[in-house]
Image (tube, rainbow, N blue to C red; front, side, top):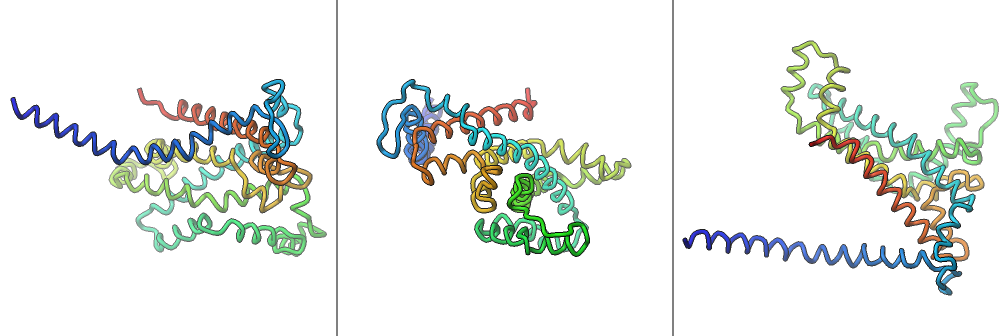
Length: 299
């Protein structure tokens, strides 16, 4: 009868040890994340300039203001444009690159993997300067297009709305495709190579192998990267600020960039900025929930 008592005592010790390690992290998350989130939510019901804040009248004034703010509406359209165009292309490219670089017969795999991943480790300011230089009126892109006869005169990419958005998308693809590729490579290396050999013996083509074996087995990883990429794109800030500065005339501005402007660049309206931030939070939560429901088919 003493053994069960000893076992229960050991289980309690293990549980206690777990809680000892977990409690500091939980307290830090509560202190650094949830409490500021609650304070920001309360702040969204206040109006005023700078620190001169008073309760909003009516109470949802900041939230109703968003629907009449043309710049914020434009920022939502831009953000979803980046999301719909960039995220699918990026994930497909990352998956294809991971499949190619997972080939055992490919030489210099380590070099190729490093080269594709390196943009993710590049300084954001440095790569923004490079892209602005490449797409400048006297930049390399215009030089090549003019010499090939595609353009008669240099084109100002950064001062036209559509081309400015495309440059942001190209920048995002260049920077983050390698990052997602690493997740897929990690997942592919957990798949037994004998599965691919068996498919090859059965006469499956590389395309059939990709869609019938690689994609289904990487489904959890694809779901993870889709959620992370969606979250990151909805909070997109750096590229909008450094590549185009939201221009021309707010044509490429994102939601986070506009929130920053309303908080720190123009006369501060922290209550309105907090309300816009919570809209982003709601959008991220909704899209993540939909992706998890669609992607997770487990019973």
